[in-house]
Image (cartoon, rainbow, N blue to C red; front, side):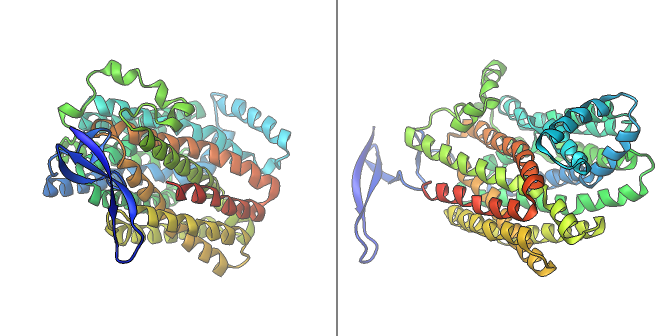
Length: 476
């Protein structure tokens, strides 16, 4: 029998605060505020996780994700050169067809013609990775090891196709295959949730953040080197390098990974998972977390509010992040080497912050740290957009790196506290889907606004708009 009753808590001379306490079979077990032992109507009877095994799997996931990101980020600095190559050498005719659509849009809103490659790269190529989160469904049905391996094989196949992409159609097909199978990040969050307890979950999320920081620091630098040494216009050498990393990652994962999702916690059938596919595609279903079952009304409302904060933050962050290189190019006349040094600086600051501080935060401190990160993002973007000197720019970039290194790990850790264990994968899949949706829409909206009003006003407005998720977050 489970009963609820009201009680009081006294801290020194403070006013008594009413709280709800839980009695299970007449025994006091805790409160329903904050970290509750009673989630979704179920008592917390899960056995303590094996600390040594969890630590080992965290390291395995970190190395696997790092290998993946080192390959994934190689192409980032090559996009302008790739588009330039295919604009002159596309036997398929796909490039010219898509470009005519972009030019029509460009003329309709008055964007200068010299920026058509920016809009082309963003509006066409960024969509190809929009729905990678769907791989979280088989992750909840089959073994995680099978699903991650399948994702790795698909990514390797996409790099192999890039290596032979002498025309734009093949290159686009390679990107589509890569996007359709790029579910390993969502799966990494799910696996980290499975192998960690609540008090160590932020550490696991921070390790994923460190992998991102290192990958986005080293990967683009390697890509920049290949842009000089590539043997073909579509950078076959870069593609082959990424392919080797993907194959090594699949082999590494197969050898060292131990399954973390017990049979009892997987979905019972493929049909059950597929029936929820629409809930993972429909924005309305995503924002309501409809696929996550068993949540009490109040808990669902809090999760929805947290999802709104996450989406709004990433919507504005990803848009301003995408236009950062154009700000430094037009305002500060940065060369590709200057851009490389800037990204190296950002990556190092993020890696130090996430590896040295975020991963060590105490349980229950995630909200305060996320608040701090959101506050930092406001002056960060204002300084980046408005500064005329390198000192002002790098002051903004430092705040940008510090704030962003806190946000996603802490918000994801908070989200992972909700829901039953059997729905953690679905919940975090929806969470990543909201992020993917924000990262598709945000850069497009911001790019258009950037070229209409200019860098200064765009970044000042973007920084001030960060106040919206900050205010919403206070009611979580």
